[in-house]
Amino acid sequence: MSDIVIRFAVYDDVDKLMETINNHWDANHILAHNRDFFLYFFGGNDHQINMVIGEDQNTKEIAGFLGYIRYSKNDCRDYSPAIWKNVNNNDSLLGLKLLLFLIKNIKPRLFFSIGLNPNTALPIYKRLKYHVGQLEHYYRISDRDEYKIARIVDKRILQIKDSGWRILLIPDFDAFKTIINDYILDGKYPYKDKDYFYHRFFTHPIFHYMIFAIRENDFETVSAFFVCREIEKFGVKILRIMDYIGDEKYFAHLAFSLQKLMDENDYEYIDCYCYGMSETTMNDAGFVKREKTDANIIPNYFEPFLCKNVELIYFTNITENFRMFKGDAEQDQPRMYDRSLC
Image (cartoon, rainbow, N blue to C red; front, top):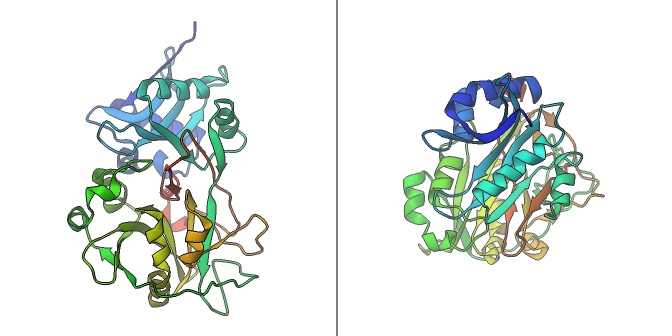
């Protein structure tokens, strides 16, 4: 009989979990040192943490852990597994057992994640018959002589036209609740309620996000919105689109506004990792698709910075009417505890 008991984690496990992450995951990871951020990221209700653990009943040490993210507080069961590690050398299947325990107990409607390790996690999801693939990566560069973050060999900048649609910065959550109607959020996979956006973007303890509403001309009615984050490196700035909610056709109207945003803020480029958006729509919005053979380098990693094109592998149990972006799962989260090293 195994001495490992699998259960949901509770608040009393937090210090031990952080120690396990420090010793067996990454000693410089923010989740190993910053308790406030750990509770922000995995805090569930007043008692339970959004993690499954395997606990050694003899030593009381954590033999493995699997975190997860919930996309709404209602009965809609859309989840993403997150940080996942088996540290028990005596049970090579513990990681799989943690995953199966989570699936059995949360009974997800939608179950997906991004950034799979191709050597460990990817084979498991393939074996479980999930749909796997790679996010598409789109970008639009500014027209300049020198690029400090990107490496541009082929300067491809699509011509755009003004469709008459405009964007409006949503300054805070109170404005968000007023401006964004529930019908924009309904019927999406994953379903994200307003509490999700409040927690994920408006109250993030480290990153600052901007949310823009999309509307036609000066009409008050908002048809869609997108989330982005500005990053500064080497004395220049870029903008990364992290999420988009709304009918795909409205994204195609962003070209003029995004170019204006790029010009006003002197962004070196704007990029977007996504699944579920057509290449035609992205082209209409001014973006070109980064192919695997692309000579240009549009970096993904900034903690620490790595000047390399990165393919983000995903899995999902639903493909129709489903979108995911860089801001989903655990992708756009701080990694390094020492922020000066970023």
